[in-house]
Image 1: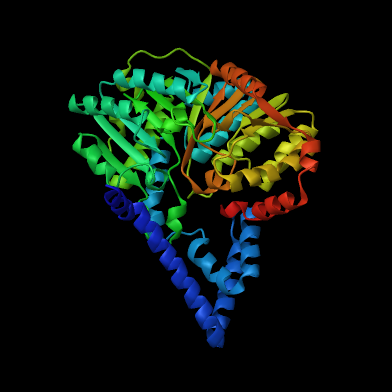
Image 2 (image 1 turned 60 degrees about the horizontal axis):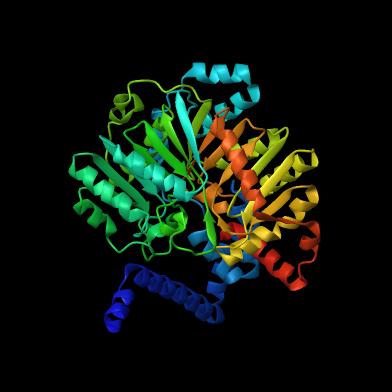
Length: 513
């Protein structure tokens, strides 16, 4: 029995992929070391590659911190650094791949049908809100909506129960798009509903990210779902070849039911998100449920990704909210779900966050699992705090990745010195990604304050203005703060010397993590 388990483990795709990647790295290292000793030509070519790489980095539009990290690596290892960057860091996909993936942005733009009266009313009521909304519409091709009800979920347990209730009501279609799906007490009841609904003729579709779920699901899981009548596909299958495209992952969390009801937020479909499996203490996460016109943007996000992966041409008009919900929902402020595409050179998620921080008048409260801000984000946070804005951030106390947590803590001192109040969620790990400001604005979504979320992954979130659930987000932040430990300036300054050295070394390479 033990031999069978060992054999099954050895021949799992993830193990084979890992071994092949290790072999490739080893072969490359051997090749460079071997020939660098015997060939002046090889040495010269490697140095030339490093010079080309540095020139490409300096002339690119990448974030300055990303540039610095790569330049340090190349200067430290001139023989390996340049070729390594040209292989894995040069953020340019092939023309064929970019053309194929450009369809996602083209379809988003095609179905961006802005109701100008909504934006005009917002601009008239509050020019600051109107300009933020206008930026999102132009940058992400996702317009603002009214006639949408918003419900805030302060935990994975609450969101899970509401999702089960709404999935049971599905009569026409169910779309699920998640970074992580894992068999267990969260996914299994959802799957049971999906199987029943598919058997009853409901159009059920599932997208999951291959890298996000590679350790969670059996090999070929999409084929099992297809055998249940559930149409399924995998985003960016992880293959045992070192290449740049593996950097771009589908980190979104979207559930759409009959076009009029949608869920999004930080919650994946795995047991730790509802605390039936304890990994890092209590897992704190958040989500929102939308019902009404704004769900259309979530539907478009899903269908554009589906068509890209499957090579299909969906008739989007069949999935509009009003098709299966004739009566209009009452107004609940302004709701604007939006996508962030890493291939369009427009960091929408980061800019939405920066605008909220820069324009806050009273307070801006943030929850994030990873606090690895760009230089622009760091400057905005510090300037806001120094200007008298109450800036507070809650991060985990128990990390899921020790090295990322070390980088987060490396930023504490500068922020606290500027007047930003930082709290660590002492019960465990906080995975929520939310902003709330001045009682007027909020964002709940999938976008972490790290380089991967802000620049490399497909993400989504919902910006809100004067929605009733903003008060719930505010109260939840204060309640979470009550069970969190504030980081003091004395604590930041009393960190041992060697710990500071390690944190700052990791901080230099944070953009590459």
